[in-house]
Length: 239
Image 1 (cartoon, one colour):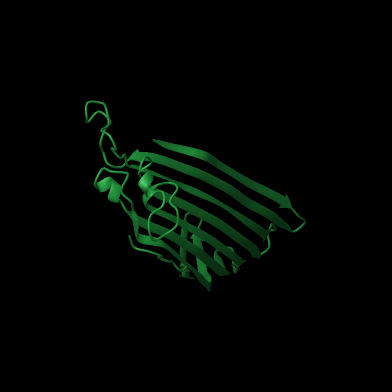
Image 2 (image 1 turned 90 degrees about the vertical axis):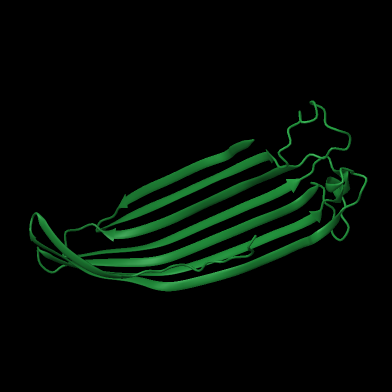
């Protein structure tokens, strides 16, 4: 069973014409929730003549992947025919990802209260929840200057900020009852709940310088030198 729920996307593009410049806004928002439920042990209900044996324990997998993000960008740029053309802008982005995952025995009451940890109402024998929030901002500017009708010089600068907040929680319960087909047997945490979290931040300048030369209407020669930026990554656990 899978289902895509709450799948929305909105975009906005607005432009204001000022006496000597143009102000432009670009924004958007999107979200979705991907739900899934599947059989874990691969044993169909008709394996035993259509009737499950006494104390037979079913195993399932449940989870979802929920994500939402939005961005905003505002630009102010010249709108005249002068030799010097300019553009300045600001940018903002936010993204959140949330992904619980559970391997369960829904009819195994022995998993309700495993020894060595908290209550386990979902009757998971393995569970994890991962979450990540990513935030990015930037300011930038660009200049184009027409030296002649055939030669244009370009230069731009941008400063970038990026922060990632990540967390993961996981645990594992020794499935004593499932192994011996007897819910009367107890269970215990082989891995009590573990919580990991970290934050990484990065920031740097990027830039570009370049030139365009048009010796005739059908030919353009250009070159540029650019410095890029790659935000820091993180890894909380390796399963």
